[in-house]
Length: 68
Image (cartoon, rainbow, N blue to C red):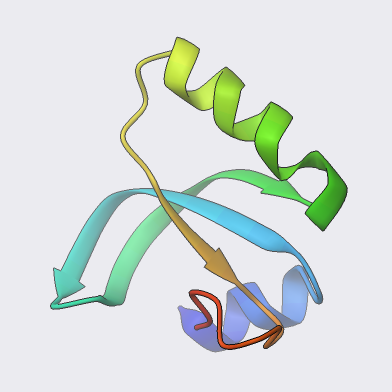
């Protein structure tokens, strides 16, 4: 899953739902939003308003922030 998402959405934030977690690592999940840095807050507001539980992950390392 990780490699497929990184290849499909390079240099993006990806919000995942229905996650199977191992600690802080996402083992599996469904993509529910994809955005660039500047759009992350507005996408997060939409997900929260829709009452969607999600985990953000970044497909490219920027300051070690929630990277796959």
